[in-house]
Length: 181
Figure (cartoon, rainbow, N blue to C red):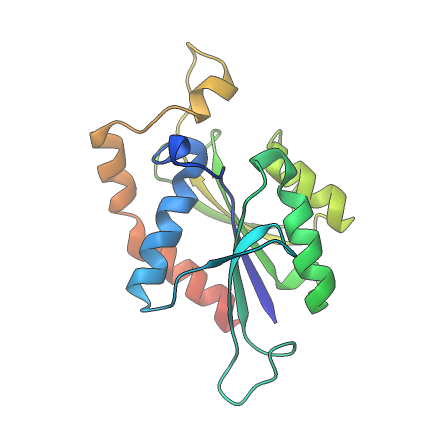
């Protein structure tokens, strides 16, 4: 079983903000792949979609898409509950997150990396007890004028959103590559 975690903050006030770029991409991915919508699970503190491989056992084969419904800084709670219940090892987890240290739209996949100041990652590492999961990072730019917390909660400008829209197929390819092993 693989777990793909799309980090963001719950609530419509965060729609189209830098911290929630993955919530936007999740909706597009689910639509593009003709998947069902994610449903909230109180047990896992997340919206989840569990897909079994054809003929497979749900616990052994397949993938879980999860969008934690805790705030970013507590994402580890949802990841830990899913990983524990489905006995998913960190190496089978892909966390998709925003990255202020990358230029807008740059996509990088990393294995076994620290939190680098990202509180969502810090929470996941703490709860899993390991940094040994993969990350798909997308650059959201960086501001020299305002603080990080205010910057990542800003909405994208239309021209910035266009740059990110152009990365959609590259993102989907990276997710497919992770699922393929």
